[in-house]
Length: 165
Image (cartoon, rainbow, N blue to C red; front, side, top):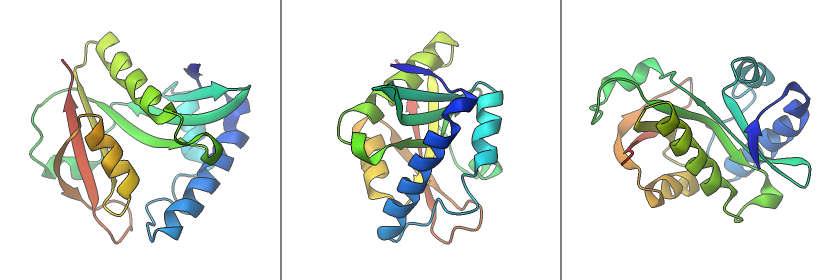
């Protein structure tokens, strides 16, 4: 079941973040670390009702943040469309729940949420070294737009877009 995150989910969310950082760094990917995403990001997401969790067996199995906030660096790219888009941030699935279509269901939820808001456009970025997420977005119909640099991460981030039918 997908639902809006609550403050009492925060410890489980942070445990998933810790696991994800370990997995990413094993692959030489430093897009997440001590400085991002921190507890404060998630508390702000919860406050703004923009963080959604996939709950299974009464625990947080994954999460996705959906809002309209685009990093300033997005302006440097040649996006297909102008105007409003739902932007995907802070997206992860707990290690023990991976390969069970939870990520795909969260992405489908994002598409439906966008449509329900009258928005037919999604944007996302992920580190160029994050092979699994790059393949995941492409598999789900996202098109590569270009690369940007975010925070103090040395590797570029690949940006993707998807126009919803």
